[in-house]
Length: 370
Image 1 (cartoon, rainbow, N blue to C red):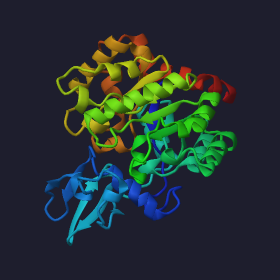
Image 2: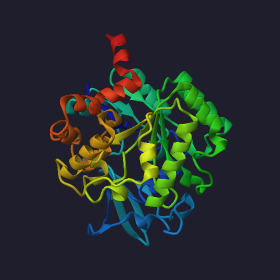
Image 3: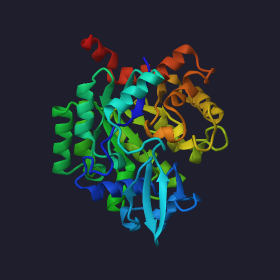
Image 4: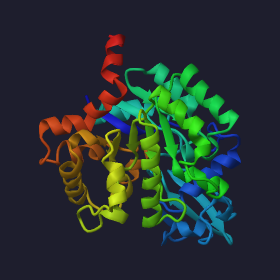
């Protein structure tokens, strides 16, 4: 069984999509675009620009976001205007005429790419998708396992804890999406391992819910910030030993892999080697615009990851439908499924599904539907 660890469904992005307002949703989206792997263009002539247009470089928080009339366009584009000049980020695939992705779109993609099951992510620019993810999981239990969204920098508050209880206890969501970039909303005023969050993490630890951690290198978005965040993660893993962790996007290539092989500092290796942590294998979403399919550069790094950590620590993911700005869904799995010939059949089975199956007991649940 092939299981994608990282896929999305979402309502039309012109709406609030589970956030308190459309404006807050737009702020989440704009923050994501400040450092996109997606390409940024000037609409008038197609000249390529950078996401630095969207924020003041001395301030990485929401307070540093520029007033640029940020808005949702068509054909996968997120539009903005500066001094009367229109620009856009080609964030979703060009063929996405409206930025919306119902469950049935993902089902059609899965059928064509021969992917059996997907883990649905939640939060941030995509929307606070607890109800929508729960709907999809309930409607198509054989195809989807859904994560829940939390208000990461305010997860210790009573409203956040009540929503956690509802999402897990009533909606039946089966894991946590947890993105560090959300801490920018409040100016990075607290670290994610701060003791004020112990009540939140204690609940997750008691429930043994998998946490899919997108470890953006906040607050400075550099190598040192990433290393410090891995130290904070080690602190959490040592204090809450029942929580399984999946490191979304896997190791950051630009910090540790640009030479063609991994060069991890000791603090990062300590985190990666924890028994309760898995690494996502997901290169096309960030490097598909730089490398050409079937991504031999990524294959070399996957081999190095296998050699260092073993196939039992690796989990394949796509980031659909976003990844189709660079390659097809089939290609996003086939660069591993077909082209990583150094992997044995058993290793591919683990990376492409078995490790996630063991984590979520998906096969056991599917047996109940037959």
